Structures are given as C-alpha cells and as structure tokens.
Amino acid sequence: MLGFGSEQRLRDLLVAVGDGERDLEASRQRLCSIRDFGLHSCFERIDRDCSNAIGSIELVAFLRDNATFHVSEPEAFNLIKFFDSDGSNRLSFQEFIQMVLPCEDNVLRNITIDRPSIRIGRFDRLPIDIEAAVTTIVVKEVELARRLEMLKHDLEVAFDYTSMAAFRSVDKYNSGLITTVNLGAFLRSNGHFASETELLAIVRRLDTDGDASVNYSEWCEFLRATPALPAPLPPPIHRPPPVYDPLPYYRYPGHYNWPYYSRFYNPYGRYEPYPYSAWEYNNSPVDVPLPGEHVADTRYHTEKLGPSAYSPSRTVKRTTYSSPMGRRTTTRFL
Image (cartoon, rainbow, N blue to C red; front, side):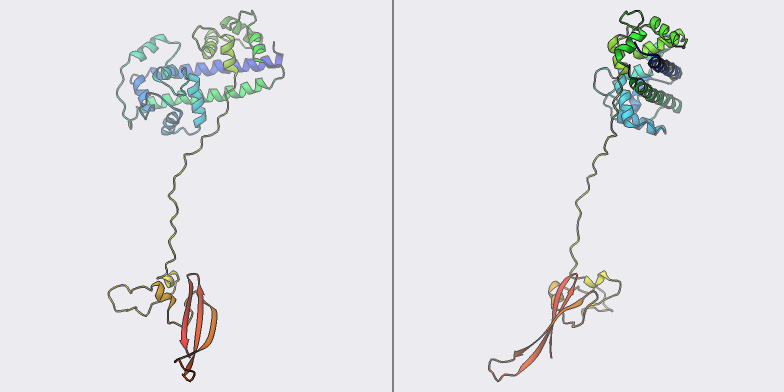
C-alpha cells in the first residue's frame, strides 16, 4: 500500500489519463464527423514512401507540413510505439485507425470505416480541415505523453513507491484486476469523484487486450517510464575531397594586385601573351627582384674564357632570389 502523498500523486496521474483520453475522444469524433474524411486517404497522405507503414520521420514530416514544429522525432517514435502491436516500430493501417477512430460512438466508428476513400498521390494533400484535425489528434497524443511522463516521475521518486504497492492501492478488493468499480472507489477515497465516462476512459487507455479491465502486467506497462531517446544524428554529408590547385608557376605575378608583363607581352596583340614556363622563370634574365621576392644569396667568381693560363678571364655575378614559388638564379657578367 502507498502512503497518503503517493496516493495523491497516483490520483493525479490517473485523473490526467482520464482528462487526456476524453479530450482525445472528442477530437477523434470531430475528425470522423467530417464527411470527406477517409481512413485510407489519410493513411496514404502520411505514408509518403508508399511502404504501407508509417514511420516516425513520416509522421514528423506531416506535422511540419501543417506548421507544427514543437514535436520532435523521438516523441513521434514513442507515440508510434504506443500504438504499435507487432513490434515493428511502424504503424500499419490497422494500427493507425486505432489512433484516429472514436471509441465511444460505435455508429460514427462504423460509418467512418465504411466511408469510401480516394487515392492520394505522393505529393497530394488532404483538405485543410482534415489535415488540421489529424494534426490536432497527433499533437494532443504527444502532449498527453509529456504530461504523463512528468507525473510518472513525480510518483517514482516517492520512497514508498512500487508498482505492486500502487496496484494494491487501487485494487482494494484484491481481485487481481482494476475495473471501473475499484478505480472509482480509489479516486473517491482520494477526493476525486469521477464520472462513469471518465472511469471508462482511464481503463480504456490502460487496457491493451480489450477485456475492459487492467491486470498487473498492463499496469506495469503503463507505469513504466518511456526511455528518453536521444535526438537522431543528422545523416553524414558526403563532401568531395578538397582539390588544391598547384602553384601556378607560369602566372606567379598575377597573384598580386599590380600588373606585370613579360618580355613576350605585346600590348597591341590580339591574343593573350604566352606565359612564362618553369625553365624561363628559373632562367629569367631579369636581375632585379620581382614582386614578392627577396635576395637570398649573391656570389662573385672568376672564370676563364679559354683553356690556357694566358686566356682572358671575366667576373661572374650570380644572384639567387627566393619567393613563395621557389628560387631562381640570375647570372650577370661584369
């Protein structure tokens, strides 16, 4: 058995379940009351990849198309898992209609099932009132799940809380099942006088096998907190490898703002001047530093002009210029 404080928190949790389920039931009935609403058309509108199943990404894309941006993909995934009965983490058509069909008005439910549907293409949309009603149902489901998670956390932090103690607090008669009778008695003992419709809504939300009662297994499944899923990583961006242009050895002065023309430049010519080659650059006769260069080394030496010792000689000046493009050496005879 739970203490007084824990029973109050459990009461708030069950009341929130009832209020949220009744609000959802009203939204489902408003959706199914639209004469143009067809189950297959709505399913095909969300199932954009035509896989006969709705995934969380497709559900989020549908909400984004209707200007709803506060529902994340993990929350949509948890919503799909709530209605998923085969463990595929996707909603088939039979699972999808359980989310949009009313549960209390059987006449309206049968009319909606028998209503004909039109074919919806991959890029088609439903009428705006239908899309708004479906969006409202999905958003209310997500908001209800958020509120229940908060209340479950408040209940779990109680020192006397266990799932069995919570079940025994509601099942006063030790019948092994939670029905509208013992559920109503529990709520009345904690100060909330629920109507029969609210009690049926709570049991319907917790019941998974359709026997109009909640056993201990279903109770534990309800109280189990949904694990918070991390936000999915974005798909990797495949960028091409960077291409680095080699140093343009023949247009080296063109990297600067001031113009420079070679000795082959013809200002009156029609064609572009032939650029310097690597050999021409390294053997340039210009004995002055070009833009961006600096003198790295200057050497003088004497060389003979003939084979004999009496042959005339001359002085040779070799100057080496350094630049980001490399080095070049000029020779000058003095």
